[in-house]
Amino acid sequence: MPIIASTASNWGDDPWAQGSWSLIGRHGSPDDRTALGTPIGGRLRIAGEATHPARAGMTHGAYETGIAAADWAWTAGHRDVIVVGAGMAGLAAAQQLRAHGAEVRVLEARDRVGGRTTGVEVGGFVFDLGANWLQQYDDNVLGRLADKLELRVVPTEFESLDLDLEDELRSRLAAAETHSSITDVLDAWPGGVSKHLRRVVDTAITIDSGASLDWMSARYGFEPGVGEGDRWIVGSYQRLVDHLADGVAVSLSSPVRDIRADADGVVINGELRADAAIVTVPLGPLRDITFTPALPAPHQAALAHLGAGRVEKIILRSDTRFWPDPAPYFRIYGPEEGSISEWLDATEADGTPTLVGLFAGPWLERLWSGPDIAARIVDTCYPSGDQGVPHVASTT
Ligand SMILES: Cc1cc2nc3c(=O)[nH]c(=O)nc-3n(C[C@H](O)[C@H](O)[C@H](O)COP(=O)(O)OP(=O)(O)OC[C@H]3O[C@@H](n4cnc5c(N)ncnc54)[C@H](O)[C@@H]3O)c2cc1C
Image (cartoon, rainbow, N blue to C red; front, top):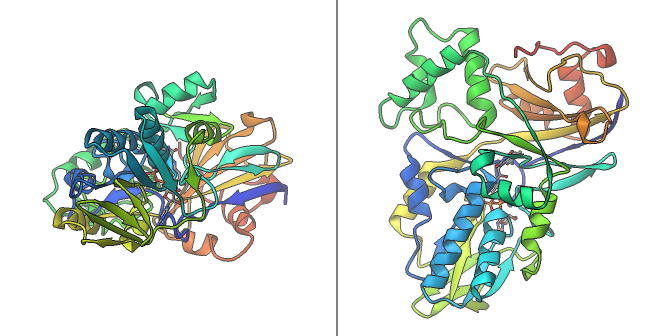
């Protein structure tokens, strides 16, 4: 086996993420994202990627919600603010509050900052196990920061498997009845679902969600972002995160379990007091926090309508270029229906043959169980090793 180093994510089992990014379920709409981010009783506001109605699931959307929440707190007269979570939204909120002149403390459950962005060293170079693209680059506030920090960013093209069929899929989904799921639309597809259509769904929806098509909203499952001016950050998000964390007081390994808010302010975990709190944790951990008084009905409805899927990543470094696909970006379909992986050839990072694979679908259960994930993945996707041909050929 030519693999010399590898690292795999596990966002699905991570208690502080409980999934990869937020999605809209069949009973929801983007209004739920707006509702979740609406200030609560003058002292509390939820922010983070799940609350952005137009840029959900992305780092720059998360960042923008953090800035908006900080401006709200400052304008409301709060001068001592606790921020829960030190991902993009939390760090943005903290920096903005500092810039306004407020006192700000950040409470972070993990022993590191960055949340769902995390750079890890794999075989001598740092790669991202969470976000690694800046999407909508020309209109991305973090893209401007990357420019300022002179980060190396490489454009990547996501080719559609079948543009016409994808357009038809999008228009049928957009025209679906309220509360329909993606499965409902596929079940009504004239002539049934061909293998080709199934693959278009995998490439257009499953890999960008990692969620059950039964659960996902037909109308709102496709949200903007992916495939729109994407640029991959060579060397990882780490420098952006370090820049945003600079000067911010973050208490690491400080999970928040309880938030009380009243007319005088907020009390966190029964002991820490502040004028207001901004809570930036992902949807799963948010559901685990006890709020007193309970969250208002629109927030609870939003939490019931939104959810997260599971998309995992592996970084494989090798002493030989064992994959035959010449394209910098390609796909491999799994033996289980609805299983897909998208691969980025990241060799240009430092010249060592490197693949970054994103995985979604039922095969995650098998591939991501127990040790030696890399060996299982290579056996499944490249069964003949260094002369290998992908198990199911790439189609772009
Ligand atoms: C595999 C993968 C690939 C991705 N690819 C991209 C991409 O290429 N481009 C892109 O734009 N986006 C991508 N994303 C999405 C992007 O990472 C997120 O949208 C963004 O980082 C979310 O930022 P956030 O601040 O809202 O949440 P987070 O980054 O999750 O930050 C929340 C923080 O809260 C902490 N926390 C949780 N619970 C508690 C608690 N109870 N008490 C205290 N702290 C708590 C967490 O530890 C975390 O640090 C990807 C995500 C994944 C998982």
